[in-house]
Length: 326
Ligand SMILES: [Zn+2]
Image (cartoon, rainbow, N blue to C red; front, side, top):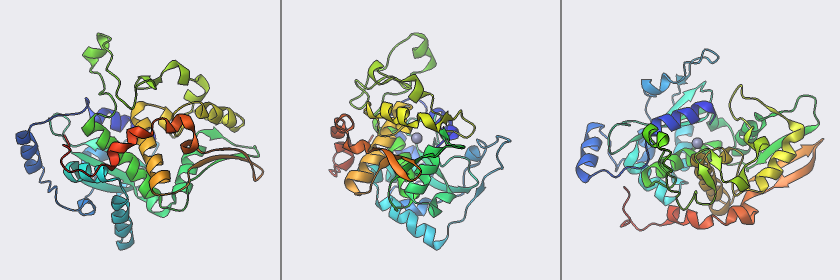
């Protein structure tokens, strides 16, 4: 979920939510040979070449397709089964394939199969290493990439329990697909709209929180927090400033630093941490330690400001099949 994810997701997702006709939907499903009744775990495929082409940075060796073991297939089935009902329904209709790569520099990538068509299908590509990591291990490693801790007694950790990282990553990526299909965050303005300075209307989730895709409303802006970079090679902050950064986060309705970077990842992180803590009953704590002692602990899902958005999560758990999925 580093820079490549961000660029890949943003450019691949295209413009906003779609509202295709039944005919367009049937035509696309037929052409891409997608069987919406097939199980999600049966959709493991080799990574499409269009996605492999994204990983051409000479700094990294080329990722290669990972053949799943029987144990990994079982973990994948469990991860799909752990998703909220709405995620499962939308993925059944829209997920063309899921791919696993060894040596992927980031962890998750969601991309559109057919960006120019009215009814979009999606691929999810995941770093295979997540099968061997707990959510705590993976989230801690990701969070530590933001800070330079050399020579410091301080450390940052995310305590998220022993459940596998795959569940967390799949929740995040699948939420991007749900977001796109239902328009839970505003569509990205076209270049023409940007030139006309036409603002997109906020949604229930972004209203009073975001001014633009990457710009929160003034109350939630903070140059220090916004200088945190989550990608390989990004500028790291001295870890001595971590407490200041998380104190700033605590004054916002965002569940994580990563979620504070743009409204798409705000929703993906919020829905993921909500499901993780409130439904799966797993912990999610941000902890700063000095020589083994906790000096700062923040549990975002216990914050009143974060909880003021809980109503926005209801739709993920409605099981009424008459609600139309566009
Ligand atoms: Zn994301």
